[in-house]
Image (cartoon, rainbow, N blue to C red; front, side):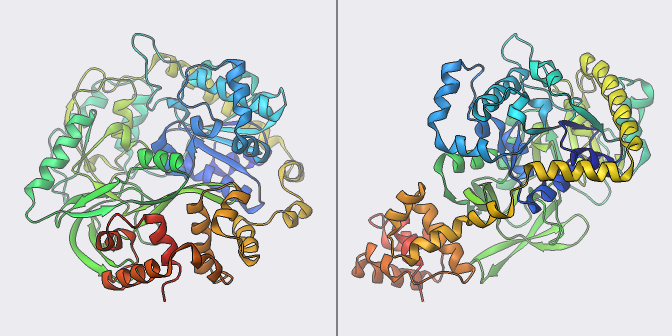
Length: 549
């Protein structure tokens, strides 16, 4: 199936399983559809099976979104207890479309749990309470983690899978790979056809140097190997570490979730000549999640008040790496946000962390592969065989799950049937179905007029001279979030007079803080805190920063 055909099917409002090999454009189609819905002010629940996958698509884990946490099961009374959480009730009420990415790593029983929760909150017995559900993933990639001796099952074993009436959209075009030999090799792995014709091109890359890349990213199967390599290589470089600390604001629990799942580390240690990899997409600046490079220097930025790393990527281009943000949003509100230089040390990374990346070059060691799909994920990260240096294979490395092999044939058949059904639709019939579904989920003009943006609500309360404490109470949010709204209003040049909140800080302390900011020559909080000491809280410093000249 082609990408535009999959998008047509999604716009009809049916439940969809969007699948296909690595590099077939699943994320591209998904982003296209989500952006379309957002342009129509439709609330979309954007989730993924893991924290890392969630950061790739700008969402949260399905466990957090649905309120189920890490529980393996929930009683009816436990689900009813969720009703006490007002934010969940509002979330389910608003959400019209639910996306779950990387479903290959989601346990079947958890999908059933989410279904039960959705039905209860939506008060609707239809699967997932009647929301359109889009499952995205590839069962040839990493499976759910097994618990002890009990084998984990894929989500298609869930009770709700067949009840959903899923339309399978199996993308079969390739956009990532630049040579046919690698593509054929990956297709052979998917077909469980890994004889000499597959092993031979891999052997040809055994411990072979990659032209123009003296130190490619190393992919290992175990965290212990990765951490040891990165620490050792950084220590070899002369000079002191340049340290970048992650900044954050918003709901503490959600911030912690973002920190755990973000590929950018909380504390980034860099030196000149450090091998790094970008962990976020920024097409305008010329990098994507997986772009490899080397720190060649540091340059002071007036905007950020700090020296930022200059990274030379493998194509020879030089990029000034400035902080990027990862956030969790809901109903137009930023619930939590972190910012960090979008880099991590990349002498080595784990295969699990590499899922979703496209690497310019990789040194891959699969001698300790321990789960089906691990080899396929690792080898599908590179774009060409010439970008691969293979260090080892074991018997598990190229294996695929037998159940997946059989199920994949069924998925391909189902997708072909869906493609035929789509082609049988007249053009005007297809357009009518799109319009009907959108009309059923999009808010009306009256709804839009009634609904003010979160910043506008805060602005109105500021104009009425409510204090930060009062606004936080009225809006059921933290004081830090209110201050964040004020910062945003200032940035947008829409902030009303806020002199009335200045009295929350003693005049003498405010003057001391202002002098400390001037002395530090920076608007960051940590340098000012170092000058003033622990008797001044970060919240107090952040509030005072609003009144800097």
